Image 1 (cartoon, rainbow, N blue to C red):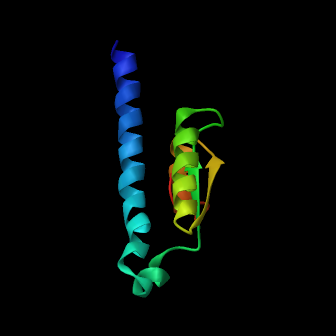
Image 2: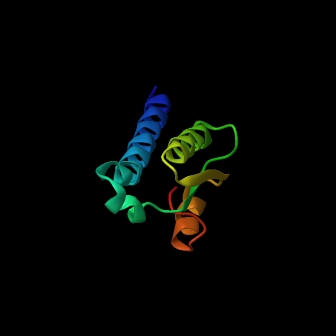
Length: 94
């Protein structure tokens, strides 16, 4: 039971972090043409292994960002390597 709870808590925290991180990007273009320059042209999201819920979530966020005009993609990663990848400039989100 504890293991399942921890995984659910971790998954919920990851989804919340992605949502909070993506919110400024998604709302940047809603104020008008003056904010158009604040959107990134492309965005790389480092996620978990292919087929995992983390990768599926990152791919979903990338699709939403694509609908908003940001070229985004999810790339395979995992665990602490995602944090290192972001700090080295290999991606903007993890």
